[in-house]
Amino acid sequence: MTRIKVLVVDDEPDFLKLIKRRLSKRNIDVDVATSGEVALESLRKSPVDVLILDVKMPGLSGIETLKEIRKRFGGLSVIMLTGHGSVKSGIDGMSHGAYDYILKPFSIDDLLERIRAASEHSRLKKLDRGDV
Image 1 (spheres, rainbow, N blue to C red):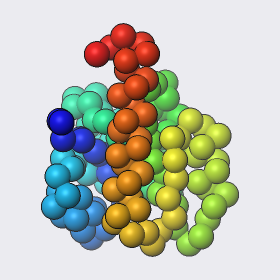
Image 2 (cartoon, one colour):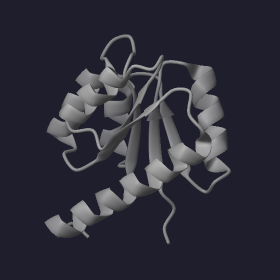
Image 3 (cartoon, rainbow, N blue to C red):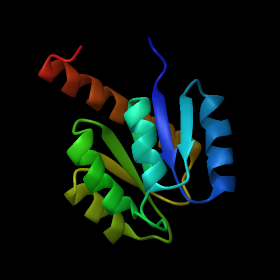
């Protein structure tokens, strides 16, 4: 099976470094972006299977970035990251087309399970559209 390719978007460089290291050890190809703007440019250049997107970021917020992703990259599965127990932010993301959300802090195993499910969801959507 092909390795899952993930883009993680968060404005905290230490978090990005940590999550990239942990997911890479679990055979996930990981790219990172520090803002919504950088994420959109990265997606234009290099498609991914799953996007992990922080809700609260300077510049384009996670929700604003999600709206742009839906316009430009419709079928991409997006997992929203929300901190401080903000379930409302996760639900807002789901209402704008996110596949799932996860609360910070989270276990790497829980995130990995969600990534795999989101990747399968993306793959099935591509099959339905005849993109594969």
